[in-house]
Image (cartoon, rainbow, N blue to C red; front, side, top):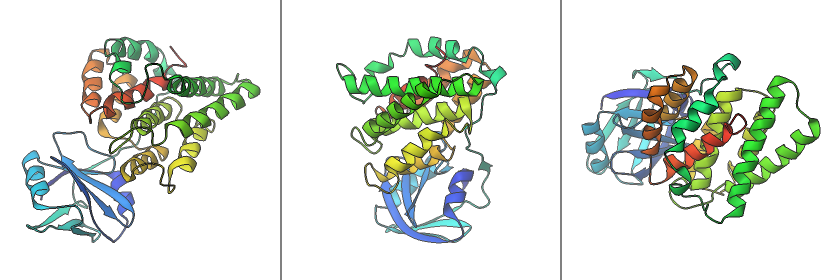
Amino acid sequence: MNVSSVSDYALKLLGERAQGSVHSVFATSFNVELAGELIHIGSEDAPLSCLGATVAAGEASLAVRAIEAGDPAEWDGRSLVVHGRARTLAFDLAHAPRRGMRVPHALAAEGMGLDAELYRALDSLHLAERIGLPWEGEERSHTALMSLARFSSMCLAHALGYENPVRVEAASRAMSGAVGYLVGRGLGLTPSGDDVLCGFGCGLRFLYGVDPLAQRFFDDVAAAVLGRGKTTAVSEAYLAAICEGYANADYLELCETLRSHEVAMLPTRLSRVLEVGHTSGADGLFGFAAAFCCLM
């Protein structure tokens, strides 16, 4: 099948050779597990996942009808081959157009005014009414989001060189508690708490890059999630990706729009994110916005 784009991070995960099976199948996409790594093949009508590749919409529909969970799959260094019960599918990933999926970093000068622009664009979306994370009357959820926002504010102070060490440590401890509360919280393929963490991680990477204080968040997420069975395999894969600085195409486009101050495009970019899953888009944006609360 003709692959229209492939994530550089997905190719990194695949390595040289691997064997596995189809993990899960959806209406227009599917996941394959190869040597413990999840690879996503989806329609080019949807944003490219940092975990995989896209094919034409018609081919994606044909593919999902030809395979089932458990069907054997292999990666030979060039093609992902799925041995479906109806037919064998081959996806030439090695020669497909490759896209870099690293979250861009907003330089200090570019960051000016981003908080106000994002706030105005988000205000009309009423995200608190659309998220899957328990919110109304849930003090622990409020505390968790406030703790993430406070930690981001400490990252800003650190970047500017005027942080208070005592306050930084207090904010770091509260952030760790928020991570522990959010991991795996909620239902579905990617629980709402995990989506919040992914969105916040994307915002943090965008604002602060590889700042050592910001890195504490990613270290805490990795320690709380990876290999511990606290959430779904799909969530683990996306949390691992953001810990390494990679995100899906819809978030990358949102970041680039903010970076270039294309205010008129923000509603379109936010709507694109909101289309993902039942509440995943809203949950992720809720976390993304929390990273900017240090500026609002």
